[in-house]
Image (cartoon, rainbow, N blue to C red):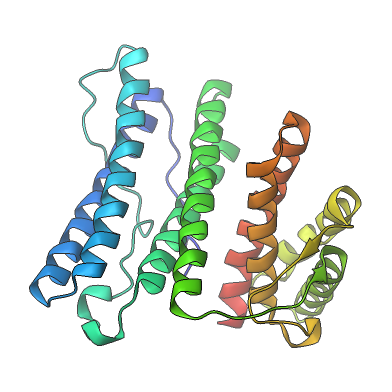
Length: 274
């Protein structure tokens, strides 16, 4: 599930922040290496390749953290404590290999990166100093970039697995439908009602900025039949795509901001609908 089930640690220094980032990337590498070994053992070479790509991507992230540490004079950075429940293989090592696919592997990786984004967003919001807040915000932006990359890989895996035709749906209709779901859930008095209510006004801003754009949801044509989680997934993909495509810095920053809002909405929706 893509949410943090407990409040993350408060990070109080740059060495602690970078050590935590190193621990998170190292844990992800170790987890994917174990899964790659499992796939070799059961004779699934196509999935070995998927996990090797994920390992290479995580090593690139780790190299970025180490380069940043060196620039700040912390070349011999120790490995810190990995935050609880950020990396999760979701039981893939226990699943019947016949049931595994590249799509599922990338789906798990996407959820891990979404949790990492939420972790760094929390750290930034609760940072004791401005420099820690800015550094955590930078980590959150990088994780959002990883989310975008892996969601794109997941879409490609989906289309290789099953080609589905879809109709074009205006962005505004999807946002309006998501807003209706959020309003309903906010009124129900569940565990995240207040958090959902606080997010309602964000949808109007997103529609004002990008409202006329069309989307092509995979295999979906009736907005009324799309679940709240699926709506949030579709909108997140749209804003990540806009951030990648935009050559205008202001538009790109807004799209990244909106993508961050959708990651938060997804985490809350999964807590009450799945």
